[in-house]
Length: 349
Ligand SMILES: Cc1cc2nc3c(=O)[nH]c(=O)nc-3n(C[C@H](O)[C@H](O)[C@H](O)COP(=O)(O)O)c2cc1C
Image 1 (cartoon, rainbow, N blue to C red):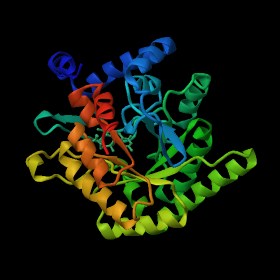
Image 2: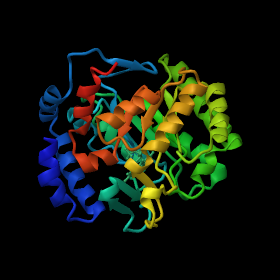
Image 3: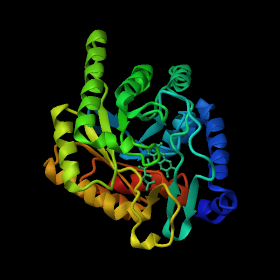
Image 4: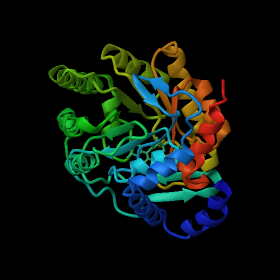
């Protein structure tokens, strides 16, 4: 199947501008997602039931390979991604306000490096519309856990960021198996400042409080909350984040987002935006192993960044990730990459 994609489908898709190709794929996936019977048949073929579910931060995952945020920004086709073999799907980033994102072109392919640069800028339909869509699908049985990644709306000033995240949290909480608090995308001006201790403490403590209050009122468990960080932080910045994560009992960390650094292999490539794919894998591993060591393995880590095959997936787990995610790898290797990796990992020690 991978060969079919690489030899036939990818060459056709790659004749198109990256975002046009993305839209074509999304249209097909949306169409497939609206056929629940087809999805369950596909899931039967692609999800492995010969091993036990994996439990991380209180949720059960059919396998540990997830779809990273950014592919299904508007929660339109996540059911079919589970049916294709992903063990969980993270939709978003969703912002409270609907927004168009930056001007096109804003996604760039680098096939030789198996990389992308994007400066999309959180283009999405906004939390209210996305919540309505999730409500309309809420009768469907979920094949995999659904993560909802939330970020700050561009027009909201940084000093009101907490209110903005909180509004998205309240609109989307009924549908999220976990929340990813995104403070690390490089394409929303100022967003990464939220990783600084003062701002992060206010943001995380407020969201946690809201989560606990909601749980108490409804007599249900709180929703697991994770923070997604940038790969470009220094270890001392990561230390400060980990202190806050421990203080406010955040359930886990997603390491990492796209990078604004350009490793040597990308010399001469100067499109602005976040780099993803193979060139960020090394840094992603460094960040994951640092967090794993610092927390003595007690904080669940979702490892993401440059997972393009079984080897890079195994390296990410060895570095300390309990779950992994990918996105760019799928663009180069096809939709069954998750299934291939999950199958191989089921026998990984
Ligand atoms: C086109 C594109 C859009 C993305 N959009 C988001 C986003 O909206 N929110 C987010 O948290 N991460 C986003 N990401 C980052 C990915 O979730 C992931 O952290 C990063 O790409 C590294 O993984 P990869 O090398 O497997 O792609 C995006 C990545 C790409 C390539």
